[in-house]
Length: 166
Image (cartoon, rainbow, N blue to C red):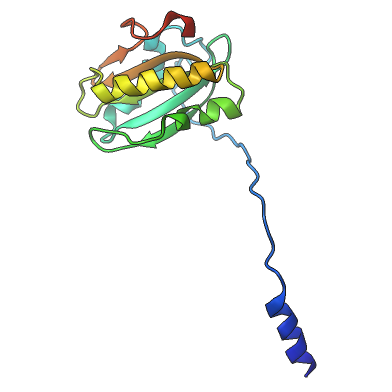
């Protein structure tokens, strides 16, 4: 009889409640010895050099690079992996990590598996949306770079980003 009461008490005990706590951790990515890791990302070719392996991907991959005020990398995050011709995401997901790491700015980089780095209409729309979101959040949006086969496209170099985000 004692065992039945104990079992009954366990069954009627309220379930515990939990809160979710964010824990930020970093994982190191090995790069070649001559990689420009500690250089300011003032030129899109430096970004292309660091993320050159994107040209070999078979699916589109979008990366957000969080930078400090001197344009040095704090961290980067693979925000989305899509299909051979598109990425699906909520634009604010791009700013998630820059906000968490208190970054001064952000640079986007993604690949086109076709090899042609020319921006699509969707790329242009995403860039415009992220620029507005970053500006409203006080984060500088420095560039959006598309990597193709041994070529790249920079929205900043093409003059398609507002100069105040520089």
